[in-house]
Length: 65
Image (cartoon, rainbow, N blue to C red; front, side, top):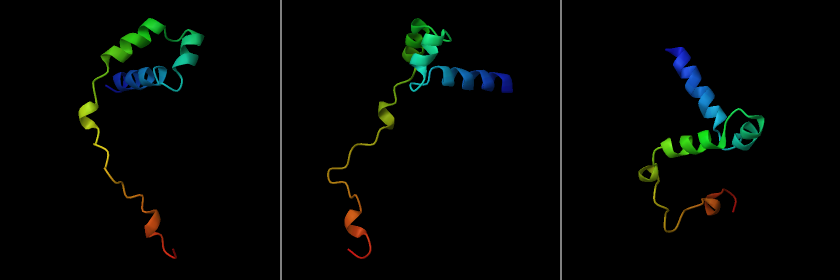
């Protein structure tokens, strides 16, 4: 069971947007593998909160101002 979890974690690290170009250059992942990975990702649009019309940045709530 943990070996599957370890394999999943390793795959996530290989396809991490911050390191993917390096991993492709090293030959750890092919561009085709990366594109396949991207197509397999789910759409998270429904999880995004709508932006506030007038966000409160709390800058005016600081003590002493």
